[in-house]
Length: 98
Image (cartoon, rainbow, N blue to C red; front, side, top):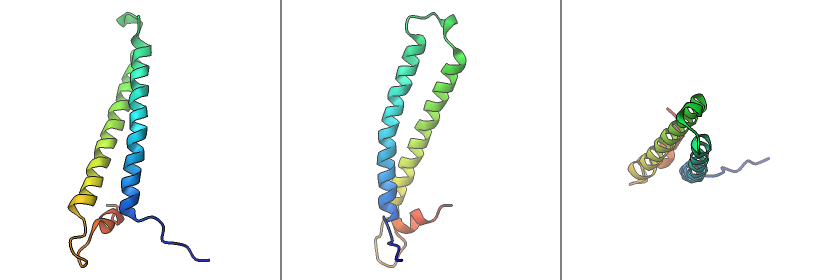
């Protein structure tokens, strides 16, 4: 049974970053909705601070993850692209996981 090579790693990295960007947009909308639901027509004393802190931390971590992925994708596709056939290119960059 022959197994195909599959999708190239540089294409997979680009596709995963785009899909993650779509999901990040949904995450932003959910964060805004959560904060609005927690604070709408309430006084500061009645807002559940633990849930607010957790929501903000999740938003900050998802934003940091998105930024790191964009930087890594840009580095692999722009800075390490194939300039010549003999040098390592973006495929070699995405193959090395360290």
